[in-house]
Image (cartoon, helix red, strand yellow):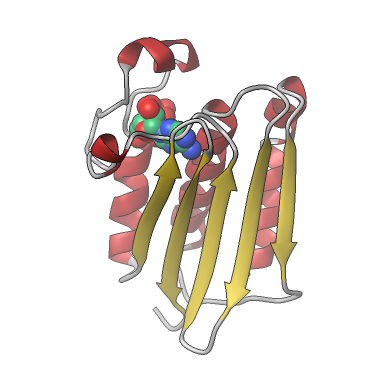
Length: 148
Ligand code: ATP
Ligand code: MG
């Protein structure tokens, strides 16, 4: 139940969003079901939404969009935050890689989140793509096969 998972994630991170006066917008259909490891998938969504909150200045926005297809489900997690320079976008899925240690130091991360996300998406035979523009925002698009 991917819609349930999205709602749970938003609830889990609600306090963090409120602290930063940020809004999480959710756009999805009523029911979306796929065959997947629920806890692993939750780790993916939590990591991406947590990043969107961390790397967006106060007052910003996060969008979670879920689209149901015939064979695939598409999950889009988008923010209007600091963005990532094109030179860095290919490296951010590497373990321990963090863009500009100084600017991300205060968020206290380890640089493992996206490596884990990529690994879990791979295990589900899915795909993940990133589109980002500095000072504009970042969009992660995940496509997962519905039948495992
Ligand atoms: P953690 O292991 O706690 O998740 P982290 O957030 O630093 O630590 P990743 O989630 O792997 O590690 O992200 C790697 C780097 O990619 C981040 O340090 C940050 O520089 C950049 N990044 C990730 N998501 C975003 C985003 N939505 N907007 C801008 N930069 C991002
Ligand atoms: Mg992270």
